[in-house]
Image (cartoon, rainbow, N blue to C red; front, side, top):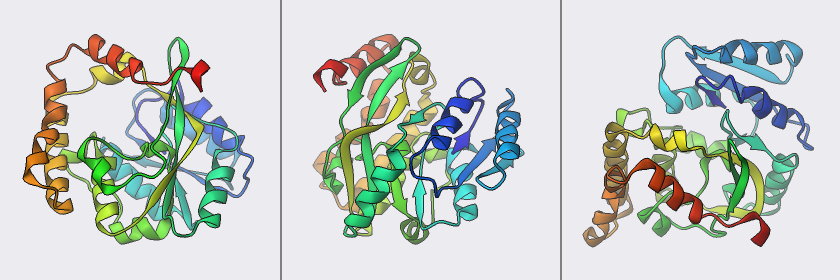
Length: 263
């Protein structure tokens, strides 16, 4: 878990790990030079659960990819689960994801669908594509990054996350291009095992710098995947979205999410 000024949500995120039905886990938290008390919250939990929780700290803001790489170096298990500091796991998330991967060794990674919520509560479910392929990268990420459980050996083959100014907001996208390029396979459980926080302020954090960086990651990924040049226009979607008012973009995103009562 990477943490950057998540004091309001961090306790709930950590508690959702403590409540897992699968007990053989270690939680590695890397605080990315937070200024709001997040680090102290993490340290307090480490003191309560010294055998389960490890807390690292970046002296300066190094962004998520670097923080996750620090966590990977500390990890002792054969499986790596991701989550964000403003989200929550369902109690049986780890149990069900690990059960799937151990029963289906042909897959290297598993993700899940997720319940989406904002300051007003749960408002929908994002259903993940069950069998994502390399072609799904033409338009978007084929997995919801914070829902995944992956073999540690895969991270080792990929040398972890790419630390670059271009991957500041899309370190997962870069990871998936390399994941499929190496011939790895993934699966998405259709059951929502994760609660994903998506408030309007998340879209407001988007910047031209991040949009241009994401565009560059798409273009380099297309080349790596040997996609036909005619598809390269899709790589400019992040830049095009910057011209759409954030509130309108937020409404569009919410309309694309399945309603809870339909699930």
